[in-house]
Image (cartoon, rainbow, N blue to C red):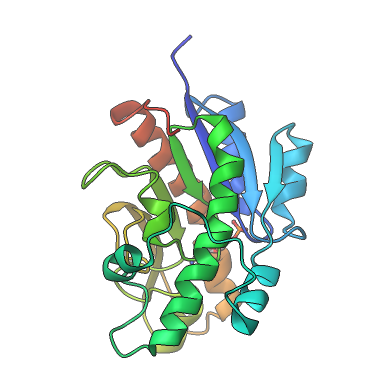
Amino acid sequence: MADKIRVGALISGGGTNLQAIIDACTNRTIDADLVFTGSDKPEAGGLERAQKAGIDTFFVDYRPVIKQAKESLDRLDIPGDFNFEEIRQKQKLLGPDTPADRVRTFLVSRAVAESRLLDAIRPYQIDLLVLAGFMRTLTPYFIDRFHEGENTHRIMNIHPALLPSFPGTDGYGDTYRYGCKVGGCTVHYIDYGEDTGPIIGQKAFEIKDGDTLEDVKKRGLELEWQLYPECIRKFAETVGKRKIS
Ligand code: GAR
């Protein structure tokens, strides 16, 4: 039996992409074991899909952390290895015009939540982390604990648009409202920006006159379910193992 890679997944929603990955691991389309599914909210439907498949789950609820941060940063459990100035300089999620107090609240609250995520992930010794509808951006505090310098990417994301067009939280909606005649999905590695990292694979589909946004989302999702396992498989075959610890 081939040496399977160990994959972890983070989700926020219903988890249809997660299901496609679970199925691809089960039927050996990819030589990978999905060893955990984590979420930023306990009610994410995909957690139940993972549990049904016998996969460990956990969540780190971001909302109370963010709420607390907006009230005061003093009562937050800021991780000892968090260097605000270093992360502020590296991050590309917030532009230069963002007020300093917003930058601080954002980066500190994310470091608190991300440190809890890292604590939950670490014991699993994974080779690859896949974001499958995880609706939180990750800061350099988290990313640097996975990537060792450039070209050693170990975090993938799936995005519902043909990047670099339409980054952000509503890829299909933005594609549709712009009036594009072609839509698509992208799997890419995570870097310090929002949806800006190196592209691994893309699939496109035609948007016809009379198509609704629901039609676009449906066609896009069906392609996502093919694309994500294909990209994980490519990773397993070419980059492969190196436990993240
Ligand atoms: C998918 O369309 C995915 O591309 C998108 O969320 C949906 C999750 O669906 N991801 C993003 O927008 C990330 N910014 P799922 O929970 O059914 O897999």
